[in-house]
Image (cartoon, rainbow, N blue to C red; front, side):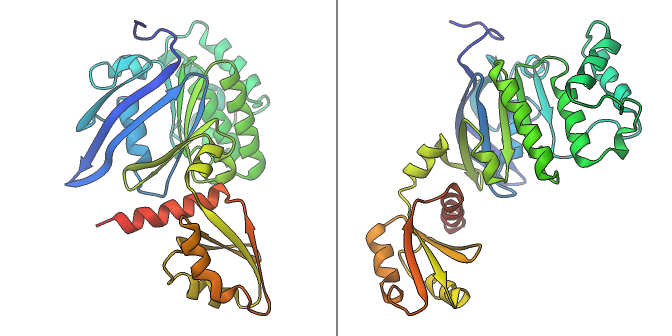
Length: 313
């Protein structure tokens, strides 16, 4: 048996997590496994329970029901041990706005009892590309620079697990790409990352993904596995009158989702025969071009959102 805190292939292993607030169930019977060195994407709409789940994993919230371990430690009884070995990067910038880049990092180094905190901060400044900005006040940094600083602060103590809660919200595409390059470099060295995100291109950068909606886990696996398991048939439609066509198709049984993609519509359904029957009357319309395509991850998630909304009471 592997002792708590020792290296294991599984970093997060939780079963039946449930959490309610004010009589409303935010997370319901959620089970999850995350392997070491994995970048695990956690996706879902606002209010789906992603942040609540992350907080239960790192010991900030106690589940009402369910059991599990994080880094080999019990998420109910050994939360202080978990907290010492994780880096948690929240959606909002959580460092001191009125301290400089250097002062923030030195403060983190001292809090964690690192030897030579000034050198640890200086080394991290070089690593995250903030040389020349050491004395700049953190609150005056751009979104991308704040993101680098926050990630540097998270990784400074040498955690085994990163919990990143929508870390790239409001950041430009170049900064997002640089952030993900760094996350992959960290994962290659054995660090595990659980990342919640709304961006489909970010989801596709993850080794595995999970989709949670209204507190329930609806799909998980690699991107290819999630797309394949959806059993989704998708058509792309181009031509004239797409807005009116979308309004008509959304009302028909057999169609799970209709979504605009640029100058086309994606029309999807889980029952291929029912989908074909639903669109049959429109296939020969002059000015419309229909083409069956592979379902994208976004098609799958739009379909999952529609399913979840149908199940809410």
